[in-house]
Length: 476
Image 1: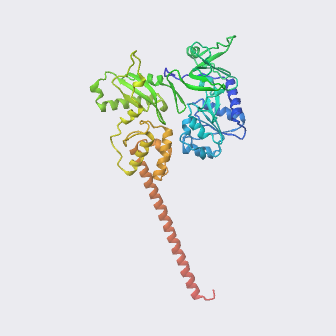
Image 2 (image 1 turned 90 degrees about the vertical axis):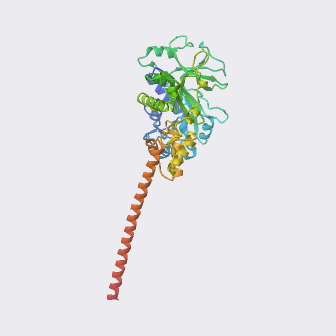
Image 3 (image 1 turned 180 degrees about the horizontal axis):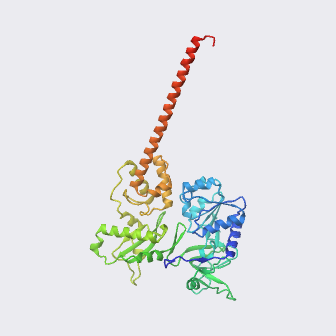
């Protein structure tokens, strides 16, 4: 949450039972189904996968974290285990090819908005569902199945034994087509937050439509609207909560951690999107900064790197901003609030990076740099810059892997790309690997050659012995 401290959500067994039965019915899961455990155990979607498999008698397939990396690794895993049902964040599908999956019958996307074009592409020959639901309502609240006649992928209708209400600020239902805040009730609702009665009372309110006053509704903070057919369309958020690659992030949490650093006077974190690049960007004002101090590039670079290290100690990787820009002051509106529209774009932030230093020199470095520039949409990139600091993430890294394997005609694993995140270190590693492979092949070929020569010598020796014996004993 925005306090910077995790919240425990108290989910009831009836919610899990209801979830399992509803998903089995909607997704047509049976004892022959094969479900991949894609979500980590710290992510509520993992409960959905486990319960769906156990309650149907289907098979739950486990894989290593490397095998679950979106792209070639995940594709190979899905085919190897002959997976029939998979739940993924939409961003994972962007680096995969639908035709490469031979056994998948049903795809469920969740965790972030899914483009209709992506749903159209992946729904050919299989069922495609869009799942929506906060952790406070046992993983999933509504389901929408993709239809080609819809211009937008909807979050659909509530699961059985769930109630949803779209209300205005006075807790009154809004008309069809009018945007309001989504409230949730029913069997999936959590009891509240563990050891946090104040927050529970704030977010889990008495149901104004229950005359007995025994039920409650969860205030999601999500803006939605009803369509004429009863389906629900997701519009956005009331606050500054965002979702990136399936992770639900409170921007205020990152701001609180940055603000706790002694050098930081003011900070704001926003989500900026640039085509397929969706990144967190932090804008920081240092204490006692002035024009002269800001012109000392080395000092600012060092402070920025110190901030990154500070964040890595306190936050998971997916919450660390890809862009970190130092400003003399944050732009403000006439009423004194931060003017988010006036902040620099992530594109300009990346173009202003240190990419003019240490340009690629070798052929391999230039090839890698070309791939990075294309995928990260950069004009230049330095050999010592970190792929992830430039806005890269695991999904984009899968694209890098595919292109480099094709250009270099060399097998490159995702683990290697994570281990060597700069052009210089990756190029050096690939050159050494290629040299070792060449030496190994040379050694193997040399051994084969020596073995063949030895065999030929033995064969000629035996032939000479036979001819000699034949001359001595013509009757043989």
